[in-house]
Image 1 (cartoon, one colour):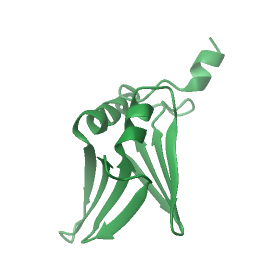
Image 2 (cartoon, rainbow, N blue to C red):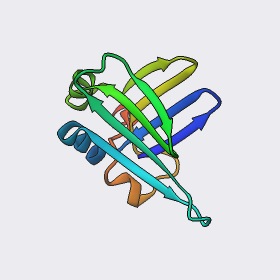
Image 3 (tube, rainbow, N blue to C red):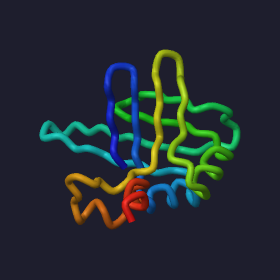
Image 4 (cartoon, one colour):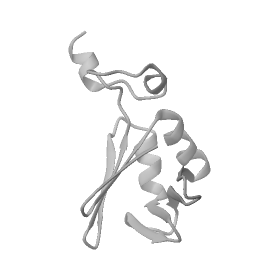
Length: 121
């Protein structure tokens, strides 16, 4: 799972296996470990009782809560992303597509086929 934070915007991009894990188990997370023994964890979690996308930050853990019904529809379709606003924070959760210009073999294997790949075939 990739995390991008820019001003009041948070974006998560998930591979096929991460989308499947979120759909099947309700959670996917990653941790970045720093030399100072500190770490930052970012987590995406689905909830049956949540009706909108929300984000929290507590104890160096960013948790994005997503309605389970939205995860179900997203994971089982060609829908690219889930989008929401939590206060001033814009949240984007998207399927990670293969890069067309600088492909990395280790990332491409689990990424979604890029829509432009089909346009040139």
